[in-house]
Amino acid sequence: MIKNFQELINVAKKQTMMKLAVAAAQDEDVLIAVCGAAEMGIVEPILVGEAAKIKEIADENGLDVSKFQLVESPSLTEAARISVGLVSDGKADFLMKGLIDTSILLKAVLDKEIGLRTDSLLSHVMLYHTPNYHKLLFLTDGGMNIEPSLEEKAMILKNSVKVAKSMGISNVKVACLAAKEKVNFKMKATIEADRLKKMGNDGEFGEGVIVEGPIAFDLAVSKEAAKIKKFDSEVAGDADVILVPTIEVGNGIGKSLAYMANAESAGIIMGAKAPVLLVSRADSHEAKLNSIALGSIIAAHK
Image (cartoon, rainbow, N blue to C red; front, side, top):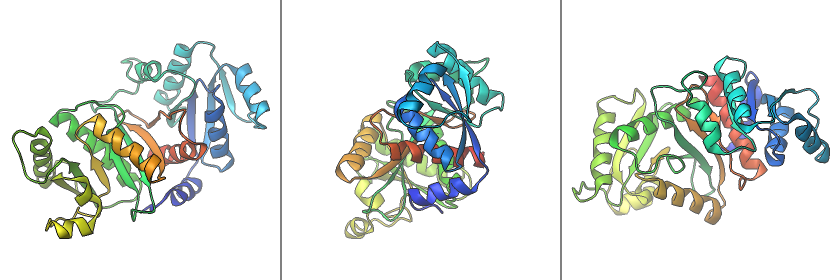
């Protein structure tokens, strides 16, 4: 089991190098992270976009892109379609967003002809590592699905389990968050968390998946809190995955971990035929590198 991001990068270095298609690669921060990952032997990049601009940015930052495949595409829409097509055709293993709007890239990802659409739901999975927790914490979905239905939460849960399994976690412990641990029919989150737990008990999420809910955040991550509140569960104080009821909850927890607990992070979009990296301009170079390493591990596992 991978316990921190240095271990994640080490694992990514040792496996077969994955091919990464970068849509609109003329982005300084993204290009620096991609070149760093390539130097480590994690990925073989395919840079799609304005070749002259990509070379200019590389020269300004002392980066050598001469050994990478460059695919000219002056249009952002075309860059998205070419990059997605590379993955769809098996010429690349996963996809990364460069200097392009997320909506343009996702439109290509979901295109019925050349896209990476599946029967699943696209969802965002963030990984966090903080000194205050004994292992990596997976948080979903604080980035894509606003107020998912029960059926959508089940698909989001399955996507997060795939990430956790690819990281070597044999028994994935999922905490379905709510404000309290008892079902309250005035609180939708408690009802659906209880349903997800029953689905987990019935084996709907596969072997090696333990689902708990409803459960508050403190009980999910603190054995001491669970002991004080007399909440007995295998998941309490040892959760791998935090499944949030709405995007606001996930966004708030994630940014609290990043800005108040100095957590390291990585993020991935799951539910397509291949992992998709939608890094933010606010992400550090380290976070972007972590995300590339994560994507390569998931791609190799698939």
